[in-house]
Image (cartoon, rainbow, N blue to C red; front, side):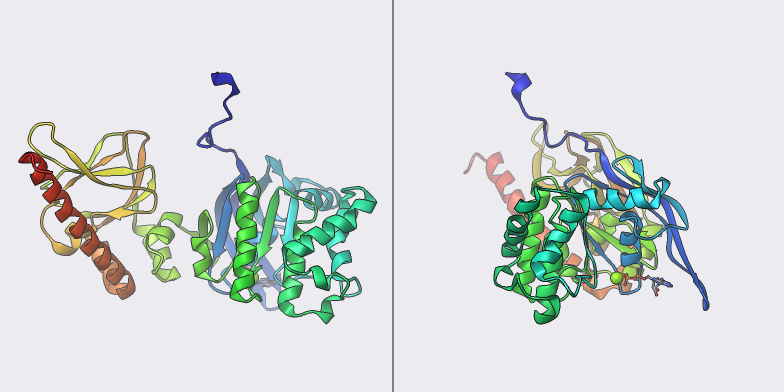
Length: 383
Ligand code: ADP
Ligand code: MG
């Protein structure tokens, strides 16, 4: 009964948010400062994205651009196909209320309203839920962030962390499809922070799109994607994921040095016993690492996926490739390739990365040895 099957999750999703050539220049008495320098970026429905970058790199400015709170100097922001800066100010404000739940960096709770009333405010603004249902729903949200007991208190009567949690509850109050949060866990202890991330994960599993600015790199383990911004420029995401220990300035430099390569399903990328002159990071698709036997006796010793890398073994140890690498049979592969001399430069610049890659080489050599043994045994009919 094919027609009753739900849609496959792997079907290409539409971009929910699309940012094109976005530039933001601030002008004031001191002169001009360009905080965003030509950003192209898109987010799909259901993604849970971490935006990371140093203080002053442009994270908050970027968020303000697609919440429609501040105006870009040039470029476009499309949300659900709608150009939000083509709307009038009042239309945009209503649009924002319906579509976005925003957690501001400095909370912006209204000081004369208690926490419950603060959480209900956005429901009133967009006219969501029956008036007499609003307190119940707001209470539920406060319970979710551990503030049930504080509901009747004014913001100044609770801790900074509790204010932040209340701001998160408020952002969820209209059940908006997009949640935008600027350092939402910045004032929380690690247990509360982890609880908020659990909550966001659950929401994104249910289809909400979450974009969260954080300066805590460990958060990126919990999100489905990381966007790195450095001095108003987006750093390549594959590099940021594959080599997370690089400094942001090195990531940026590296982004300019890599070359994009494409391979068809099943196509050979590296032949065994040939010299390897590049370091490869996987941007899309997956690859098989294969040991060749006589005749058809190939053995796939490992599969590598998005944000994994290969070629490091040969570059670090010298010599020819000990296995071949080919694109997986399912879909095309996109790689970022870094020439040997740039790879060597990188290892010199980032000892931490060199160490991490060295550890992986050791691990892979161990796996290779085991695979060799399995293969020999198979050849001689042993188990
Ligand atoms: P982040 O959130 O990554 O810490 P911001 O986006 O707040 O950084 O700021 C990026 C840069 O833009 C900083 O150098 C900041 O000083 C500057 N900036 C932000 N807002 C303004 C403004 N209203 N006027 C002038 N400069 C600003
Ligand atoms: Mg900020």
